[in-house]
Length: 164
Image (cartoon, rainbow, N blue to C red; front, side, top):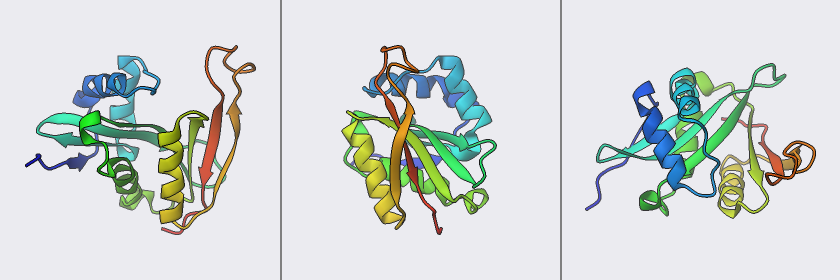
């Protein structure tokens, strides 16, 4: 029998485990280990990690969008280890963060996804359906204009308004 998955807010000591998890989760962009430390410490109230047998096997990092006219949670990255795929963990983690009392006012969820990341498109479309909210997309960072051709276009995905 597999060990139970434990969802919890991240702690600063999870930074390197997050760095290692993201490195195992292609096609995710790796961040610096310092960036991951900031994600799990500064943004722990809007992030979640999933542990199984003391190993980090999943994570959602995000933050409240500053200067937004509507309360918006920007999902920075969703990572699920191969050993935990197929369990619905990604959506479970997203819903875990949304269910926290301090997130009750969130009206929109935003993230960016490259066109070829089929798993992320499926996840966020499924989340929108479950939340009974609309999903829209638009170009946020264009391949040539923003990435000088070195990264695929990132599409802004917006779900909402939410009625949690």
